[in-house]
Each structure stands twice: as structure tokens, then as C-alpha cells.
Image (cartoon, rainbow, N blue to C red; front, side, top):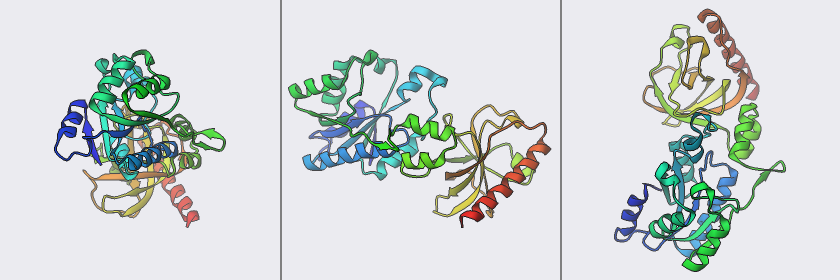
Length: 317
């Protein structure tokens, strides 16, 4: 999988001798937040058509995501950070991910301008897979029917995405966020096709956990997460080793936290993790995040959380 940032780099890549992009591509467009089972079906459609046409597959994504651009801090929390999204798309066999910066200039594209400049001139798209409710261009003026009409005139085809349902309802990133907000990890697992996990790099924190007898790996979060509270987790190391533990995800109100953070205490682990990337899978909710009157009260609760987590893990064996 090759990550391509921006239309200029895409054109340069397509002009390289022997580039698989020289003859066009089969593409899809979306946020792909979570790369859930609905997204996975879209990717299968794209890969199938790409194989039939002998062309590379391309997934177009945006940074920031459009709702983040328009809504700022009021935008919905992300299910996955950009790097994790790329890994998921790679694992599903997409050949190229085209990342376009969503800014004021991009927002002003008309529907026809987007088709001409992005889909035809830059991507040379031969087949496009999008939902029939897909909207694009300034004020969302472009739609599926416009794509179909221009495609017939300019030599590319357009295909609907297949609707995927679980328990009678359409799978969507919004529905997954709601399930996670309600601590329904089982439903989130069904919608995602895997257990919900956050991946990130371990950074230096305030060392408070070490002082109270529960050292934690502090993982940098770039965006507001869809979960908040204390959970039983399993963390996977870069070398593949896994350790069970307990994690707090939120703003740490007892120690005047402001930025969202993920702090993980691993059972039966000794060593340093600074600078390493961990994949933290959320397995069972223990409690909400609350503010305690003192650090001593927080310490007592953390040790109770650890006991409850060990008890739950013992029941799963």
C-alpha cells in the first residue's frame, strides 16, 4: 500500500515510468473512520472491480475529516487515528490511499470542479464506488446522479455501495460511537468486525501512577476518543507480546487533566515502554471516570479497579 498526500504528488506518481496509476484506477471516497464491516464491504467491491479491470484500487480520505473542519471541537470523536486507519485499509488490500487536505480552498470546489480536477484530471478514475447518498462539492451540491451523468459522458462508471446491516440496522461510524458511549462493547465488536482498540505511542506523563503503586503507560491521543472511563484491556506490544491490564481513558479530573489521555497499567509487566507503540483493546467496562477528593482516594479506587479487572479476567479463562 502506498500513501499519497495531495493531488500534485498523485500526478507525479502517475507520471512515473511503469506506474500502475498511469492507466487510471478504481476508487472510493470516504472518511473510513473505524474501517467497520460496512467499509470492508465497500473495499471488497473496489478490489473486485479493480481486479476485473486490471487497475489499482484507491481509497480517497481527508485530513482533517470534513466534519472536523466545519465543526471544530464539536465534531464527533474519532474511532481511529489516521495511522490506524491506514493500517486497516492496508490490511484489506487497498493499493493506494490518497489523502487530501480538507481546507477552505478544497471546500470551495464546485461539484463539477471536483469531478474535473480530482476524479478525471488527477486520478483518471475509471470506476467509482460511493453511496447513493454521497454528496460533494461546495454546499454539497454534487450527488450520485451528477456522477452518473458525467461518467457516461467522460468514460467512467459509478457503482452504489452495498448496505450492510447488523441486528436490522445499517452499520455506520455514528452507530459505533453510540455503542461505545453506552459501553456496549459487544455491539461495537459486531459493527467493527473486531474488538474496539486504540493504538498510539507511549509518552512521558506526570509519573503519578508510579508514585501510587500502579505505573501506567501514557498513550498520546490526537483527537477526542469515543470512550470515557475505566476498562479491562489487553495491550499488544510491537513484538507481538500481549499483557492484560486496566486502563483509564478520559481527562483525569482528579489531577486537573485537560487533554484527553489513555493511561494503561499492565499486569505482570516489568520494563520501559517509552517511545513504543501499543495497541490497546477494550474488553470490559469497570466504571465511569469520576473526580476524587484526594490522591489517596484515587489510589484506593485504582487498586480496587485492578482487583476487579483481575477477577473478570479470571472468569474468562
